[in-house]
Length: 121
Length: 107
Image 1 (cartoon, chains in turn orange, green):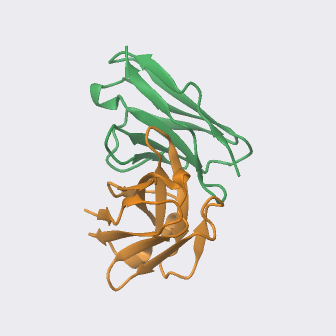
Image 2: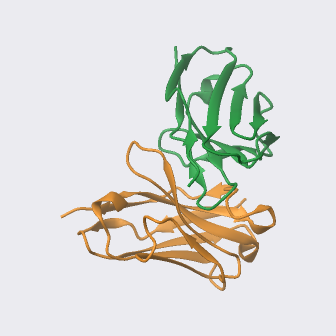
């Protein structure tokens, strides 16, 4: 059974940076596109970013473009999200989610339990 | 971006009821529509892919329908474990977008 474990969240001041990680196991990592999806407390789901299995293709929501960078290390089965110039509105629970590339990038079949990011002074 | 609208944002139902949750897209999306269930404190879980295809392991009381701009998730006989929030998601174009969710509560 596939498992995704996020880490790296925490409290950061506006304008600060954080790097989130998502460690994957129980799946053939390179055959999955990887995504970050966030959920502000008590709110709905918002897609943040996607990355192809080979790491060559990246996609971002307009709200994070130019501030966030998605990457992966296929030798470590790990996904990353480098978040710079953080804003209060970036505060949320950040989930990593997989999608079999053969079915497209956004069919989220496995999810982690999330890591909480709080941006506040 | 394609907007997904779920209305109502919540509904009350009893165990055994047939429940239908609507979802509307702001433009044509064919059948590129998924449904997720989220329980408090848990990650979302996919129920339905491409409008009507049941994810492996999901009970058959869940079904999806629709195409174009109007879709629905139906629970044929509501069970206690089905009280949750349900989200639709379009994957027709980037960015993929979610509806705001419909919370199914106990009557």
